[in-house]
Image (cartoon, rainbow, N blue to C red; front, side, top):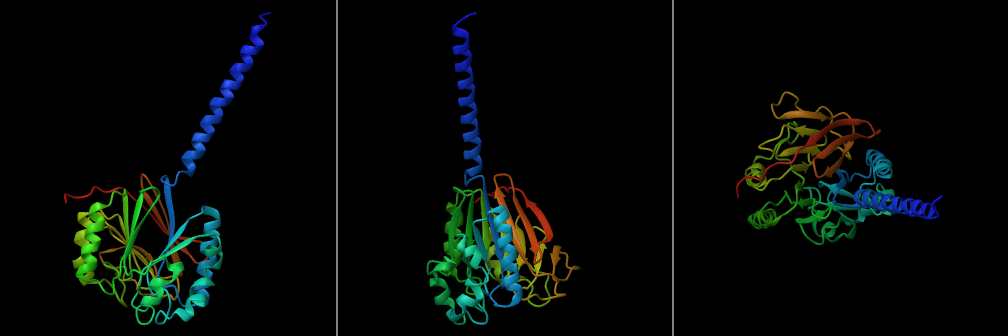
Amino acid sequence: MNPIYPRTKKLQVVFIGFICLLAARSISALRADPAIDVRFAVIGDSGTGEKPQYEIGRQMDLLHKKEGFGLVLMLGDNIYPNGNPKFFKTRFEEPYKALLEDGVRFYASLGNHDVIKGGPGEREYELFNMGGRRYYSFVEGNGLVQFFALDSTNMNPEQLDWLEGELRKSAARWKIAFFHHPLYSTCLKHGSSLHLRTCLEPLFVKYGMSAVFSGHDHVYERLKPSQGVYYFVTGAAGRLRRGNINRNDPAFEAGNDSVNSFVYATASRDSIIVEAIGVNGEKLDEVAIPPRTTLER
């Protein structure tokens, strides 16, 4: 019997084990890489302090414990009726207490109700992560996604110039905008903002915006893509406006105006999966957004 064989076999086993360990570590690192996906929730017209807001908050926490999303986009009307800071605790901190304790970050945009008294207060409120600004952008997932928070109540030339500058220099694979007033909505109460559509849609198309989330109408609605851009209305995280969707409108794709809801989205390299989640955890809608080609600048 060759006395070297057992030692050689042992070395082979050690070597194979080392290779397997490296492979396992590589797979683990790949799964932990923040550039692999960015998971986030979206709520609009949420800040009522009423039972539906608390129920949505509980459902978001259940999903967070299962999926581990790290941030929440807020689409305005964050603190009813006028953005008063005295309601921060009962109309934000308490409904989302579990999420905040787990380190989930909320990024707010301003709605028409917020700016009556709460514009400065909300902009400076640490838990809204606005940094004192009416509009701002931030990047997640090692550059995978860039988010653009806009002030649709006061869309002036200065903000439009800032937005175009940010879009022009963005290197993110996905660009996502969020603000209060929808460019597209079939709803009977408010509906589409044609002024904002004139201002913003050319920039969204030119610079390859992938998805746009707005509130103002208290429903969930997904509109047919316009020039490659996907538009969502998700203003049903507080009070619901039942029977408000016009399903005969040519722009209507899917929606729900009978159940309070929020949106959950996962952005990976290949797609953004957007799901509307009802107050009891039921899936109301789902769509996969493919990458789009940025048009000639």
